[in-house]
Length: 511
Ligand SMILES: [Zn+2]
Image 1 (cartoon, helix red, strand yellow):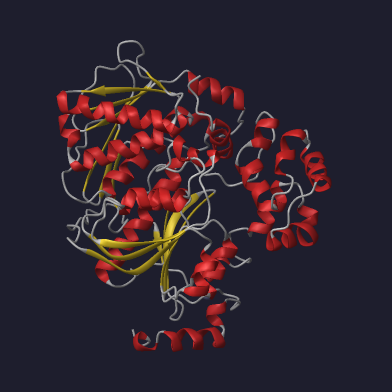
Image 2 (cartoon, helix red, strand yellow):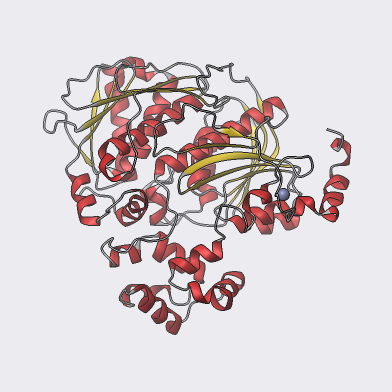
């Protein structure tokens, strides 16, 4: 009994990236592993502690057996608090004593040299630089910039996953040596300026406190001297399925508001004003002027709707099959607006389509799925029987979702892994459930963009920056300038919308 209670969700996520996935094999393999986490006094630096914190938050959600290998008194003390953290993430986790079980893979922070026979993965950071190596310690800086430290934990967790499941991930290999700048994402870059002493957020709203939002808050909570105003917006509560990849969430948080969870982490930021908005962003848009918007929402339609509300600028983030990333948008000018990237003709399938497909209702998308998603109408018993029969699963476990909106059925039964477990993992679930390290990385990049934009008071020259953590870290350029929609079908190519945008932001229209 060491696998997390929310293992079904983890298996759903893994099934999407692993070929020939079988739940039983996956479970067996995980149960047979012990993940070592070794660190010494040098890992007790500010950045080392941040890397360890996030590494534990990622590893403890998936792997049922972990083993701390601290060297020195301070490291031993830190190991005790990290053990407590791991247990609060998965109450059933087995914290293996070093002498009983030899680790099968070992993450190493600082300059520790653990006495283990297994492969070692060294992670560390220096300010904006995330570092990783399979050969030698990379060191952890003592700066006040935790972006490299957080990204390094994600890169290490992705390498751990690739190493363990390499036969089941096409083309996946482990990185040998990584030095990745969160400052400019450029290949071979060593851009690493000091973090500004005071980052002032100018009435920024963070929409969505899901898995990416959790990663972003983890990082923002660690930015020294954050000032200004941040509004955090999400109407939902944490459910058990969320624990699989919400880095901030502990088991005791199930049922608590996502906004409250974020606030708990941001209270360390004494000098800025935090506004809590525990409801949907659409509600907020009715009463507030959303000028500076940071987006960690799930759906294409939400993103298009945010853009249609005409914020001055947006910073967007995503995880999807194949990549994760961040993007910057204005509305006028020559570059893509947010909606340009998410038009139905674009590369991202719309939510109606994804949900219809997942529920086996592809042919009923227009007459059932779309209207029900729009109205929030509850699912009745008849429709539930229809869905169960189309998915060839027994209806019983789905009946608790009767009376709930279709979206809740989708989130609970499909994303939450109910249907997946009913089929023993044999029926691939067509739903996007990223691995925890993917969402966390997107969140850290999102927070990094917020902080850099505040310091520079402008967007970078690129539109998107994207990364695939199921592959080796890229050696080529990951940023790209994106033009507006080629078919001229976007609202940013509509004269009325453009006039409204320019009228709203007149004083800066000449920028
Ligand atoms: Zn556009």
